[in-house]
Length: 260
Image (tube, rainbow, N blue to C red; front, side, top):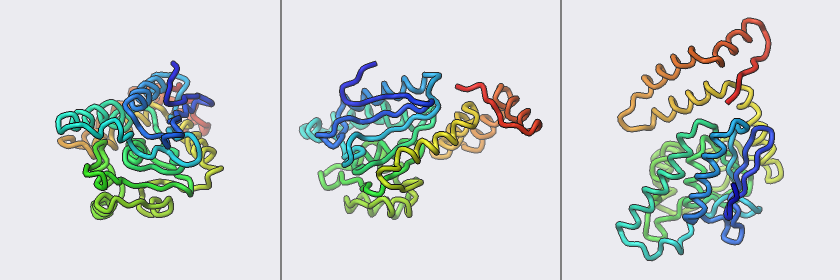
């Protein structure tokens, strides 16, 4: 599949999806959101993909926000539709994806860009990364899940401050807050992400899918995360991955899981 606003390549079972609008600092417009959905969905279905990495082209930005020119003249109804469609099509979609998704944050991750990174299962940042939700400076609030995911990751007080001041934090502060898992140099960002992806791929794809569902259940209104964990735990016992994993352990060898 060919795209106008993104690049998608697969190497060694890792699909890297790159937002490729460097002249716009990789800002998200409707076309880019739709293409990201399609690329992520395609990678998720592919037997050749075990981990997805999302990043931005160039050295300045991961994604420096949404393309404001697309919605500057929207009314209340259109604004609500914009948020609802975006959340369903991309941000919630990524968060609940069966395939692990890592954000490789290189440079600015602002507004919709930070919301995209937060929708990924976890984040690795380069030292030049800057993160924030500046929407209130435009007279609007984060609309792609930012008011929900940021408090989950950094705590209510820090999220309130970041959103209300519209300020940015650097990579080391993001690490201190728990917003990112690792910080490394710009040149080593992708190699570190690939190293982490390699560790993930040694494990059971089926078990990882169950773990994602169980972890996310804790943050879903009206869902008992413990019951979800019990259900997913039980399902594992009926899989070939469980048979291979336990047999390999008892035989003191590395497991060779069937794969996706």
